[in-house]
Image 1 (cartoon, rainbow, N blue to C red):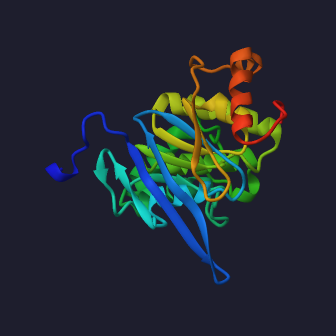
Image 2 (image 1 turned 60 degrees about the vertical axis):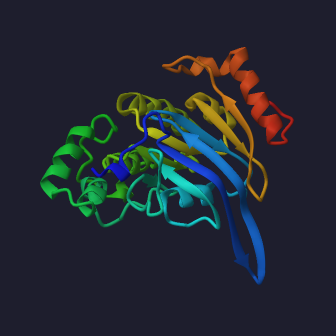
Length: 265
């Protein structure tokens, strides 16, 4: 590794500095993001919440390199990262599993495209299938899986890229309430094992508090960081913590920042 690309000691794994982005829509300019700055530390779990249309997904698209900002800078390990595609792992809102490929062939697609041999990728994936609740389903097609299993397969595909930063855009948003709760706990177990740095998007403030080290609240468009809230709950997290006064107080602060009055919303 050349000196120019060596990570700075103690630098964030991902840092966005003063990011702004505008789009031209129907002949007019729409400001999606305005002067957004955030940092994601090594092994940290940070969640972004905000109203629909505030630019959360746009921010992740910029972070992973699918979009370029109009202003601002993105850094990885303290170094400017003009070209970011493939340097961080990104899971969009939909699982995007290819319907004609088996579970095993879906989860190994990323590593194979990155140059890992098919045999090596399959060997690692098979070893991880039990952790992801997919053992025995390696030859199943996506249509044969439940919604939760599809999301776990998509997360395994993302993790197998072995990137130190994972961007997860509402991975549980389309799931029923019970499956969502189960996958929240499962994700924390996987994260505790691999300690990847995660930037996570959700609309659910309880999910944000339960999962995160810090929660960032974005304002309505143009999106800005309106609040940064540390979550000092001990780890490992347990579901009963959600009913404790400290957790309820954190949710109320987030709801207030979002302009919502009902603490149970």
